[in-house]
Length: 116
Image (cartoon, rainbow, N blue to C red; front, side, top):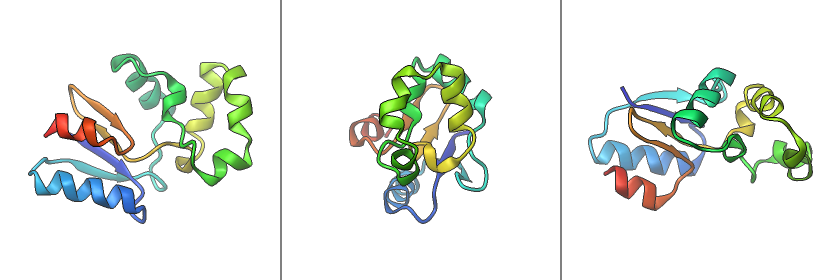
């Protein structure tokens, strides 16, 4: 089953959800604030889909800026990044769409067009 992790109040997440529904793509929805991706999930997705852990960070988020992660991220280990990402859903880029064969982080029009 496909997994769609989003922040329901986010307009971008709403647009992507509408696109998925409009194209009859089934998914289980998960609220990123209530059930943040776990350390193991992020690690496994990173390995399975060959995506660097740093790509999971919501670089435009308030918390990212408050923690000055732009300056700190390069010197952090993967373990430190995973711990941070799994600590607060607002640090994770959204939405995240996960299927058996594809992982899409964010709202890349190109990626969703390929999915459809």
